[in-house]
Image (cartoon, rainbow over all chains, first blue to last red):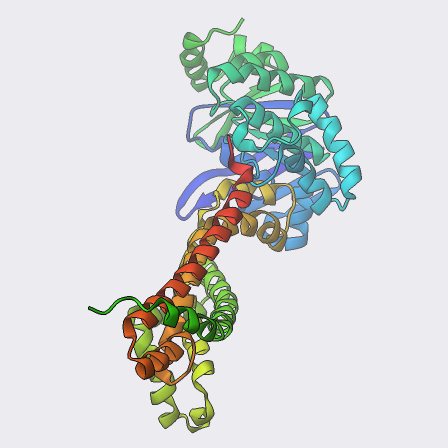
Length: 249
Length: 224
């Protein structure tokens, strides 16, 4: 189970969000939508301490910590239970596709090189890049790089994978292959929280869609309800705007 | 008209080459010490270690802001008057010390730039999979910073080899000092200084060739 209780983040005097509560069950897939600049990505980054939350409690599996008193060890433990997929892929430029995936298994989990490589090759197979094991990021397309980014997150065997707008930096031609891989993970009931503007994906894949605006969770529910029958006026306005450009079927 | 005395040059060559090891030793020792000091300075600058950062900035400012020759004279002729225990310092040690301090100031800045230049998102990616700060430095940042800094550091090494010739002003008979003495006794200044120039040139060319091979290796990961 993943739980956020009263998570608060401020940058100086500016409050990004206050008192956010969010709970996920094992195997649940949540998509967070909302206008730009409402703190969706910052919230995601707080869950694995890429941003330090200012108040609240984070629970991931058997680890629960008070963010105001988290020790360095607890932060490391939290990060080992979560994995992150970045908007700009953030692959290690000095490492091959295989080594990008294996790095955490070797350095963090302490697997032997041969064990890690065996698992790394399985993952490459699953993300459809078995033939690119020895390719460096610079020689891969955007879609391939992001699939390696997802592969790296899969290798972490995390309780939850956090996706921060995984397709918004991609050329349109590569979006589908990345979404297809995420759908495959969803079918395997990998717990995930996805911040995305891909409404079609949210509709098809999410168990629950969370709408955020101005640092607040305005409403949440199954996509069938939230997309067809949004209660809050802000949700209605947002959906009207995005769905006018990209109708969801 | 004076014609180039090739026989004299051929005879002088083995004599001068006998001094090449001392030149390379001074440059090698200076480079190693400067690398260590520069890395320390760079890390202090990158992490903005309170107190030390200001000291590092002052150090870098002074050693980049004054000529190497002035620094060498200061260490060899000046400082021993104040700090009497330095009276025993010999010219070779003073040269290595001067080269170390002078070049570490320059090298610290290029190492710092190389560290800072590694894409910030890779740091986040490494932290997100649970790496510690030191694992991040060792496995992700430094290997990439090394690649970026290598060409500049090699240039400083080449510069340092040439700068060892200043040791001659501290009375050290190294390559340049030996040439000066030989030339003074034969009066064949042109031949002697031309020959020593060629020796420096060949040494630097060999190093440049090594540098190109090294860069090629380091750039393997970045070919499209």
